[in-house]
Amino acid sequence: MTDLSALCLHCGLCCDGNLFDHVPLQGPEVDTMRRLSLTVVTRKDGSPALAQHCDALQGRVCTIYGDRPAGCRRYHCTLFGALAEGEVSLKEALPVIDEAHARIQAVEALLPTPAPEAPRAVLKRARQQELAGSLSPEARDAWTRAEDWLDRHFRGRQRRR
Image (cartoon, rainbow, N blue to C red):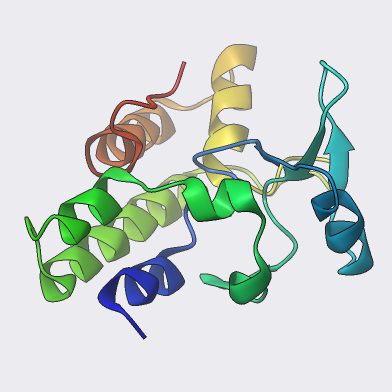
């Protein structure tokens, strides 16, 4: 396994819904994803997409990594790029991922138990509570720290809106 694959399989952030809402699908990928019992949604523009939190994600590992859609294959986070360019080693990159997960878990610990219809992605739930005016100051601080970490190490040019 390459260091880049090891990085991705240790992470899962691009699949858990905290970075993205969906992955665009093309042509036969729609049938393949449905055959794998994954949730395919229709976007506002009518195009098909794989919903995020992806049902193929188990813990931090993609269970269809070898068969993942082209959109998943094309995406490279900032940390992936740094590893690919030799700016960081895998040994240096893994703690960055662990810190991201720790920050997300810190947010989750400060949120109320989610309703069944609530998004699985912790940062989406925090955002909903912020918009509703019900996010505690402590949770808001933790959420901001998590989002800033993701912006710095994972989103790069594709920052949240």
